[in-house]
Length: 135
Picture 1 (cartoon, rainbow, N blue to C red):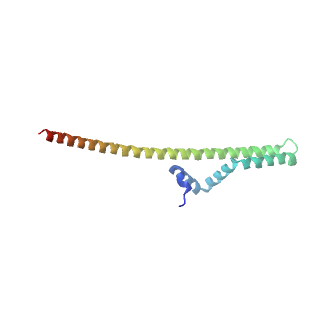
Picture 2 (tube, helix red, strand yellow):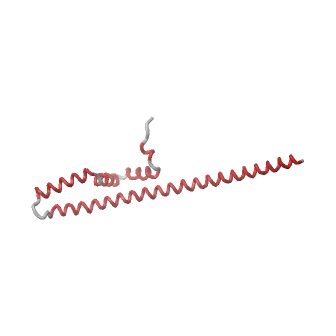
Picture 3 (cartoon, rainbow, N blue to C red):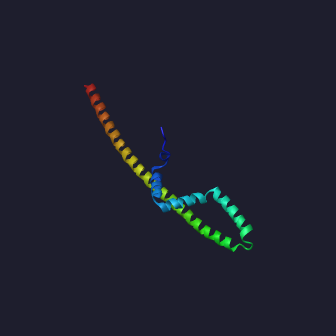
């Protein structure tokens, strides 16, 4: 029996993930964010910056400073995109949880009414039988 790994996720997460997967721009942003938040990204940059500083520019590395500044601007944008994605998921999850909670409240209310009705029926039947036994 195969197990669908998506089934382990919250239904709201699947909805948000499907929406993001359908949009090419969001897929690119997710891929960049995923790579930028990884150790290979750090290693590549450490090697590239060291090589640049030692081989390509002798002093005081104005081009490297410009490149790093531009990269920081773009990466901070991708961080905000990631935060927006997380906020979208949290909102979708909250909405889903609210809907489930409301459904459970209605189901519990109905069960309470049924139990109350059954209790009243049992009470009437016990009182009626007690009355018949007295006669």
